[in-house]
Amino acid sequence: MAIAASPYEDTRILVLMYHAFDRGKEPLTVDGWQFERQLLWLRDNGIAIVPTSALAMFLRKEKPLPKRAAVITIDDGDKSVHAVAWPILKKLEVPFTLALPTKLMNENKKHRMLTWDQVREMVDSGLCEVASHGHEHKSIVHFSNEQAVRQLETSRDILEKETGQRPIAFVYPLGAFDARTSALVEKVGYSMAFKASGAPIGMDCCDPYALPRMGIVHQDTVWSLGWYFSPSFLGRMTRLPRGR
Ligand SMILES: [Zn+2]
Image (cartoon, rainbow, N blue to C red; front, side, top):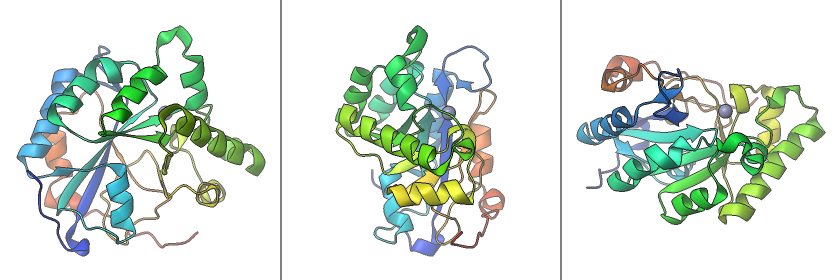
């Protein structure tokens, strides 16, 4: 059931950052059953799970969102996304965004990555959006302007060629960015960029090229989500000056 939209200033959004699923106790992996519990918790608590494109429209004041919303992002293109997370996301009809490093996807060393066929299957369902996570998954802060632009453009072009979807979001590899590189992301034409550290998002609070995300790691449970969506945590919205 769709949740009604709220006035722009009342909405708080948390972007959740996942990496891999059912890979033992590795810190960045989340157990499949736990992932499903978390998605159900969001649904049962009236939190709308929305795609990245809806967040972009909200930030441009083109379309409001419900009072509480979450965005599911999954970084790095680990093959466990298709094996474990995808059946759950599909069953619950939850929209999500894959942040993919295109060179690593193309090489697919040790077959640890998703295949492009698997990505296309998820994109074609209408639930999955793709974001660039760089070409080589290296911090763009250490690149010259020219090299950084090449990473930004090459990854976008490969994603568009492989999936038919032109990515609107850039996800900073290793979470690293600065004023110079975030300006390049904007100049190349991305609508928004995500970092790897967290706070809630609200209208006029955040630089759209440094949007915060909350990392969900192995020890996180629905209790973590309960805290993140509590009034005291949502009150921690960082008010950053716009413009760099
Ligand atoms: Zn990454």
